[in-house]
Length: 203
Image (tube, rainbow, N blue to C red; front, side, top):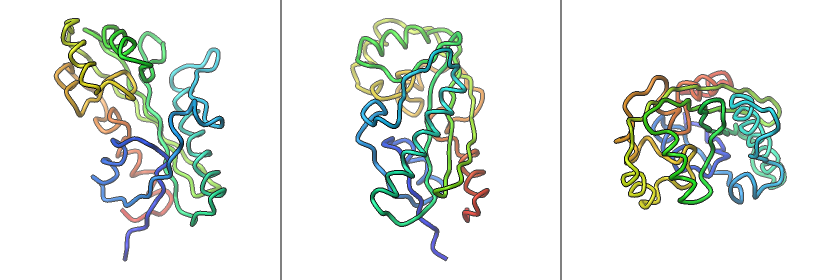
């Protein structure tokens, strides 16, 4: 039996790689860009919102936005997967950097200490929405300003929550992780698999 294709409501190449790793065929359901470019998917923080509430809300909004686009474009009905990742340091939400200087400031803040990486995953069949949350802890070794500058200059920090990608050169910064490696990358495969099975998807 041919494995069913799902929609992936994400522009992230890391999430595509992770779905390919578990042999789940998908069709990207692309947005115009980051949430701020799609009026119905607001990625800004709400007053008093904590990191868990934030990441779950944004992931749900991405899923709802994906389902709406599926309906607007009259696409075949399929399962749709959406996710969002953010970092938390001292109770503060740390998202994607606005520019190189912002990336440098974020990495300097993470230097020599631990932070939490939260990824929420939502799966929908068009009417039903189910969600799982992955929370991991990452500890950075102390970083020198010069190596932060070199890292930011590679461009790898751009468009990544916390201004780093664990699967790239930033692995040199990471002393310890507790939790889900794939969750830190942006799509926790354990939680994703559990959601797919919950909807009867054959893995």
